[in-house]
Image (cartoon, rainbow, N blue to C red; front, side):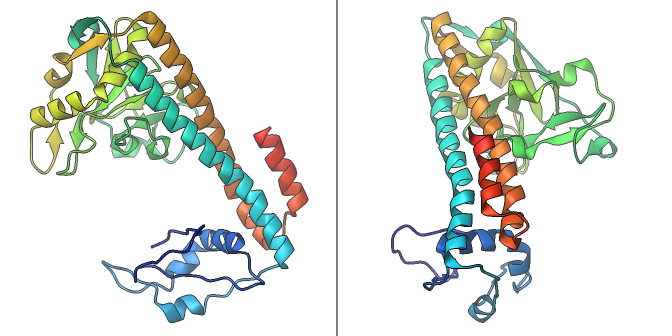
Length: 316
């Protein structure tokens, strides 16, 4: 419950959806943004515990305040410009990650990770040290929520930590972080790698994570790329111990054989990733602006011309 989708073409939906059909006085994109903003209100109509449902009569009784149709379209177009740019950035990011990974997945020489890198286990942190946000003396804390099946760091899962730690618990852009634990039986996160974005700065990582630290920092991209391979996925599954909670021993990484790409391939991949990280930072700014403008535009505290100036300044 909670997804808002605008349909570009006619299609059927199951009984798990409420379909909102707009009349001539209501723009469908404007309605989508209203529903996005009013998620908490909509959830108050939900019934059930394990399976929550919003029934048709309650959905039909939902009221909104709407300006004239031209204003609705202008508001939707302004917010839509931000969402379009965010979607474009996400496509660039996905393509860039694939290109960098492909470019560093082969080479004439072969070696093991243990021959070119060291492995460190992360911080066994205390709950009392966790913080809601960063600040002086508080560092980001990479944890299992940051690992996804694409093999890329998901910044939305970051925690923040202000307790004690040692220098070995700090990771930087030259390190490859690898999930050594999976709390699910599917093991889809176990062994997934991630690179630390340069913009994140020094970051801590939990005991559920290994840091792979190559002696030659330029090899980090090659190691990351090949830990994303199906060959390593199968190896991680074979080395996994435990049933309810799966764990990955260091040997699964240290003895894993990798190819050493040419320096030209590594440099090219690194340049692509620099663009990816720039687009990620821009996307965070765009999403923050969209989320800030959304309630202000819908309640009329900010008018469309002012919002367009903010959007132009951010996207230029």
